Image (cartoon, rainbow, N blue to C red):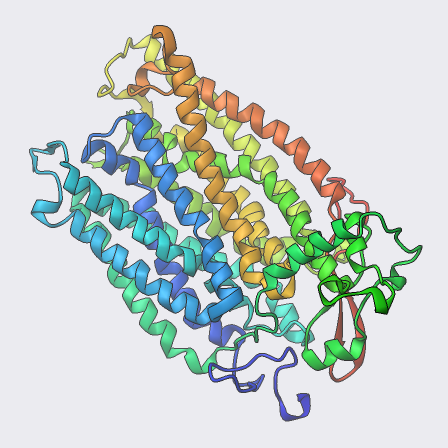
Length: 589
């Protein structure tokens, strides 16, 4: 195959024909994908960043209800990718799942633009004061939002993995290019988010919500057209297992069925297909690891005469795939609290900012949600610095092509995030002191304190995301079983989704518990007469405890070890993650 110039990993075109390495894939194909990612993020953050403001000012929802509804919608956007990834991995493939889902996304955006533009679909407003929305208007608005969530379910897990598929892992040059892919992919996403938080938020509050939602809708349509222009350049991974998730359940069932059998003394005695099978089928063979040893019982060889088709042993590769998913689930659990911290940027941070002096100069007033742009700006500055300077510098010291291991990257990001929430707590203590000094009681009164006091927490969260957001996406893609990489990346999206739901749950419970018996709620309707500082302190304690759990989980995690047969040079072993003791964080490389 290589003599003819085809890709080594067996990727094909849209019609199922082998593709030429020189004429397809790599960054020239990804150039058509990043435009969609930028506009999709612009659309998402154009809604999410300012949704709490729309719900409170236009639909007259109280603080707790608006925060809960924003979290529930954001959570749905990040949870639905589980279904989209399953459909892609098991039935339609990434390209067609993305195609159908992107059309649903656009329908949702069109409906949402109508909901805030057409007179009878939105509350009537006079002199900036809006009447309460009727049940039909509320139903139409939320239906539009959740149609977007359904569309996002098929686009989010597939567009990034489809982009990563454009690089041939077996080709050393392309593998090196792929090492930077997720950094620059997220750079394009951050650009879209910046346009949303700087431009769209201002347009929504000053020129109209219809225009503010209409612009990303048009951009999304144009980006889809550009995406299809690049179709001849795209590489498509062949689905070699029809229902890859079925292997996971089969391994668990077989392990329990063989629970009373004794494991052999050496892994080589477990069942595995010969290397020629993997060469012929172009599947990746995964080598044995010592993690979750009980599951190895699924691969115990038995007397051929006593084995029925349903009791046929699993291969080591199948067993290791299940181990990978369990290991990723362990890491996923300790990403939920960091995702809860991130949820504050579109909810309580915005409510906090509305109460502060937002003037920049004598005439211009900054929308509170626009402060999120500093998260994006810090990301846009930090990503090139990370990729061009930090990675090469650390590579010389560690020998790791990524500079530091994936889990080290996450750990650094989580530590920076803890510092950010500590600063948020300190700033809120200061705000409460100013409120007390000036005897402010009304929710409409502006606290004589600049909104730029919130700037450090936003900037630090942006820097943290360069480590943990990009790191998580790369980690879950890299560590997923080969046939489940779309489903694997949903560990990333679902973590954000569950984090939003968790924040919604915490806000509701904290409000009820602290406000009972006539007490002052930490998160009341009037944030000038609440105790957000206590809530931020609570989140700070949770984050510190979670950091300890992350370190423990990282010490237990064993990276994927693959054996790939390179067509030109024969068999070679690819070891991207041996379990070694770490330096600074005592994690695993």
